[in-house]
Length: 390
Ligand code: HEM
Image (tube, rainbow, N blue to C red):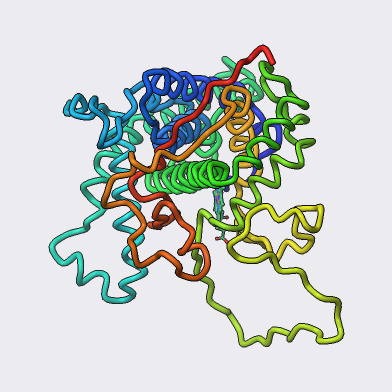
């Protein structure tokens, strides 16, 4: 139903990303100039929420307009005891609903027992729906009026076929309120936290590997310069940028689990012992330069968006959005580092992780997962503003 909407023309409307990325970077600069750390995860979550609501519904929740949080150890932190704005309530309720839903598969068949006293997602979903339902109702009413106008001959059918948002597209297919609600919430969840997580972990890894940020910046400045807004072709030509994103997706897949059930018995072939050696990057590494290329040739061994008929519909939108933000970031900042003192004490890697195998022994933050992955307690960073004349 939604597949036709995700055409290249529709998803490369970069002015939407530019507006929200510009505001996100302005907010970060203001805060950093005062010597404060910034929770990068919070900023990009607002960026992807505002971009997704604008793209899907034509109405943005404007979460970037609200003040950014201060770190727990910041002298300004107590200032934050104020009433929550609508955008904050919406973002928090959407996250809480996801957390509740993510615990259900883990509890397997007994999950209804955990909610004997009532559906735990109902409360947060009431807050989400208070924002969404009026937008859906308006889109349905607008579509009915447009259809009536076509019927009366007041406007041509082409004019009425102006599918500007995903919701406008959906209401032309159905006006079933449950389908419209579920489809839009589904895509909002699919599209918001996945890209925010990738951007967060990309910045985390670049703080730990400053040479990668330097190389990315060189590619950005060499291709787009320090001022101009990137185009679809710029992004397509930036191989190192794509490698940074893909390597982040490989190491920290935003959707770390998925369920499939075989619909008939089947046997998977063993690998051919006479075949060529297969290069498998060491699990903990990032951007291994040894092969001189970064892309997995076989899409079935690199599948953060999954593969086959259910492949992620928003893959291209996601690459455009994440690339756009990283380019703007590299144009505006020349360096970045983690501020580990700003990390809340209960959100630091526990001492027993030290020396553990794999990434666990290397982590400076605690990755967690509900439906998608995130950094527990936020990703607190400090960044150096770039001289934009260079
Ligand atoms: C880094 C970003 C993203 C990742 C890693 C990702 C990953 C995935 C994965 C693993 C699936 C499940 C596929 C399956 O069931 O086999 C999926 C489905 C989906 N994604 Fe994404 N996604 C991302 C961004 C987005 C964005 C930005 C949007 C929309 C704007 C989106 C829309 C969807 C939709 C609609 C589906 C359901 C497809 C279907 O069931 O036919 N995704 N995604």
